[in-house]
View 1 (cartoon, rainbow, N blue to C red):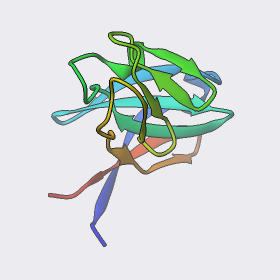
View 2: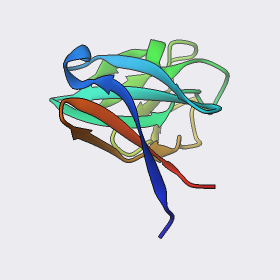
View 3: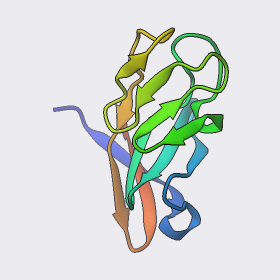
Length: 107
C-alpha cells in the first residue's frame, strides 16, 4: 500500500453541503467537495479540456464541468457524461478536530 501524507486544506465548517473549493497541495490542483456532510477530493482539472471542476455545477454527487458540460462522480472520480471519457484521480479525505485533511501519496 502506498504511503499517504495528509494535508490540512480547510475548516469543515467553511464548506457547506453541495459546495466545492479549489485547493492546492504542492503542484496538485484538487477540488474539495462537501456532499451531504461528507468530504471528497478529486483532481480539479477536467480530463477533457483545461477547466477547473471546482468552478462547475454540483448536482447531488455529480460535478458538471463548466467548460463543455462533461460530468464526473464526485465520490469515485468516474467520468459519467460526454465529452469526458477519462476518470479523474481521487484522494482520501478525513476530518480531524474540525479540519478537513486530504491525503497525497508519498513520492
